Image (cartoon, rainbow, N blue to C red; front, side, top):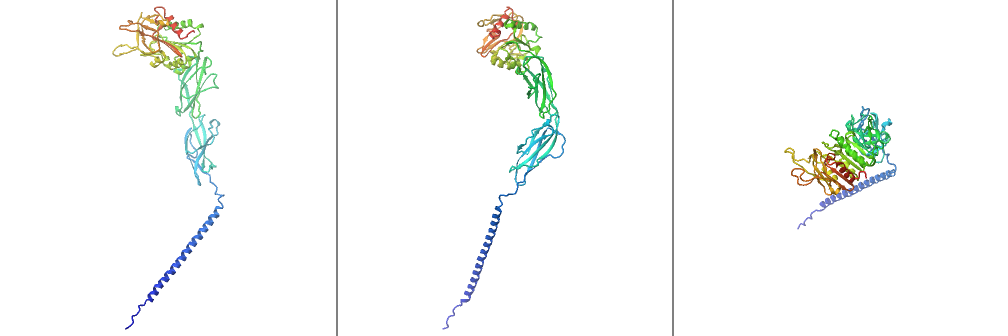
Amino acid sequence: MRPRRRARSEGPGKAQRGKASISMNQVVSGVHGRRRFYLLLLTAGLAVFVLLAGCSKDAGRPLPNSPPETGVFVEGPLDTVSYAVKLYWWGQDIDGEVIGFYYRWTCADTAALPDTNWVFTTAKSGDFILPAPDGFAVQSFWVKAVDNVGAEDPSPAHQDFPMRNSMPSVQFNESGLPDTTLPAVTFVWTGTDLDGNNTIAYYVMWVDGKEGDPLLVVGQDTTLGPDYLDSYGDRTVYIKAVDEAQGASGTDSHTWHVLAPVGDVLLVDDVPPSVPGAGMTDAFYRSLLDSLVPGAQYTVFDVASQGAFRSPGEVSLILPLFRQVVWYGDTRSAPSGALTTGEVGIGVFLDGGGNIFLEGISLVGTGGSLSPGFAAGYLGIDSLRTRYVSPSNPSTTNFDFLNGMVMRGNQALGLDSLRVVGIYSGCEMIYPSPGAQTLFYLPPGSYSGQTENYYVGVLMQQPPYKSACLTFPARRCDGFATARQEVAKLLTILGVGQ
């Protein structure tokens, strides 16, 4: 039996081993290659580290900071511009950032010198109003940038601006200029400027002898009081306008007469000379005060000849110069401009402890001079009675006083009766306020259908003041020859002559 041949396995085994041997060499070779690569990386890293370490030795000597640079968005010669300008500027820094700017203005003309101090800002524009008091000035603008380490541009940007300014003008309003006043007076004026009337910054006002103590006024009116008008007689007031560029106008002036206050009583004659019998009414009150005030030491203010009060402020300064005010209007048919203007000032006077006597027609209601609020608050007149006139005029507070009517006086105050002489329109019937005392009244039957008292006078004695108000012409009610003595009683209650 032929022996079975063993299969040859050497060949394939060698081949397999050969292949394995080659693979191992490649692996070994690859491993060594990677080691060489890592070694090269390590060497390069060490070189970089050494280089960086070498650089760190110079950290105390950084490169010097470069200062910023600045520019203005207007450059070169310019035509004349307005004194009010808007400017823009810019800055740059090559090694940092600009955090702000310093700017200032200068001028070779000392009369037009602005604020020359450097001003810091983070803005890149600004609105400026520059002095040009003589109408022309060359103002110079300087600006320099500041960087984040505080370095400033060593060569600030600079631009010259030729500037013009129109001079303002001012004039007192002729219609309101007084001839004679007590030591308080209001002046009104008009200011103009070709650059715009709103460019007038203020007005400078003074009176003769006060040149070194002028008043600076914003607005177009002011009231001079006793603290400024400290002497009497003929006085002259002066005024000039100053605009926002410090340009000044010429001076306007006015001369008037200032009355010296006399005594504690002010007698206000508010009767127009056109009223029939006005002279007799004036004589009635003047003679009455002559008899009550020792030495006739009182002051008369004639609204018709001396001019009505021009402002509430004027009245509030004049009346407190006195303790009592006697103000009469008689049969004045039109509302009193002096009373209407003076209402607020009268209130100030009463609140300060003054006393007042008011007399006249149409004081409060239809065609009246005083407001219902003032009448209720200071005069004790809660409201007024009304009457029917016609379909076109269904309601009025004006009543007619008829010849021969008799008014009863409040006996609790020691008052007697008065009798009307003549016919007078515009008299008012009062509903008194709580706390007020009535003075005179028309009893029932005085008018057709009248069933209750119609009050025509009221007294308030409410600290700190006293007020007495008659809503009829007292001098015209002397049928019993008692008008003077009854008015005297009221003035005595108010402290006149006491």
